[in-house]
Image (cartoon, rainbow, N blue to C red; front, side):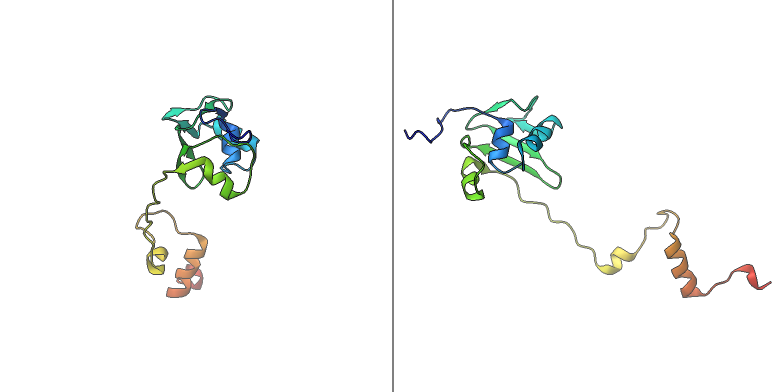
Length: 137
């Protein structure tokens, strides 16, 4: 076996693995991700950044706009380019759900009883119907 190749059953810290796979921009961000309870391995919450993962483990990440499901293929040696990092995991993330796009008309309409109109809304209504204030007494 080549000296640079990691051992197939080698374990690696989760924070390092997240950094090497480019899921986090720095190790400190990876540690914060783990400490904020956004990482699970094999369905179990990861208690600390020093938790070790091994090939075959299923890692679930909750990021700001998406949830990722990855399977560890190998541990990393360094944070390399995306093509190199992509070899460290299999992505099992389901495709994102389609979001219904609203037309401009649907976006502009307010739901009845959705609260008091804003000042801008009131001025627009006044311009539309004319100002019927009691100033003309």
